[in-house]
Length: 198
Image 1 (cartoon, rainbow, N blue to C red):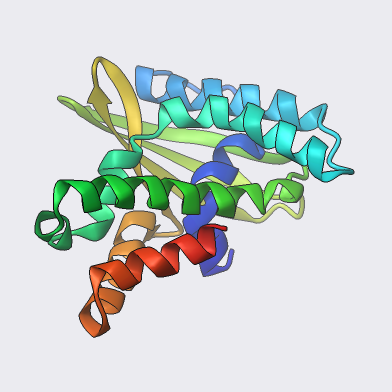
Image 2: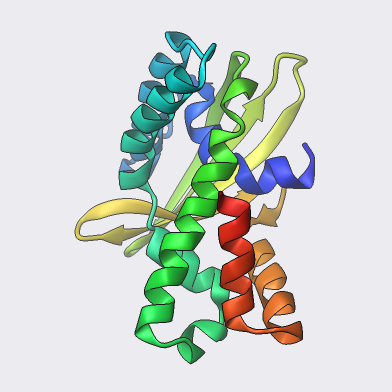
């Protein structure tokens, strides 16, 4: 799995894989499994021959994925110390742009679905934080580790980071964002992100 696929598997691994039964069935795992099952059903029946059809499928997947992710927390963590230096308006704009960038990336990958399987291999809960371990199996039998980190928001488990093959989506973005801000500015970072999200 290349680095890009690892980072952006956040969504594609949720909706581009089939789930198997497992002995781990706590609330965090079930939240992820539910989204996977719905996503698979959509993709198995999807027609992606035209842009209109792709747009409809992406909109259906968005309705499944958005409630499961805490994009605000992901954006905040990915910006690190620079989050506190941004004013409220910049923070709001950053969260919206960050979310759009992630959506653009997973939307570009919906053609990759090819009967992948996922096995949920573990779950740990510590208060309002949880971790769900899984392994993805591709059509050639190769396996990749994917770990979801979640926390409770208003009583619901939401994902705030995904670690694919030991590479954290949030940490990777933080490194990239810090480099851009260090050599230019926060506004330049936003501009670059908006260009990539379009």
